[in-house]
Length: 46
Image (cartoon, rainbow, N blue to C red):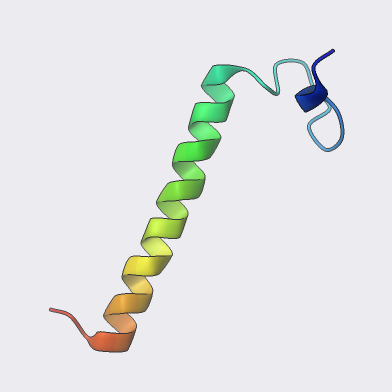
């Protein structure tokens, strides 16, 4: 069993490259969206 298959991710395939890639894209996309939203809210860049 992989170390990544323990803890909160207790299901088979939790550390598969496909799932890790999807999670990374969602996480980085969310962070980028929040940064863009914050810059637009703070500086009204239009």
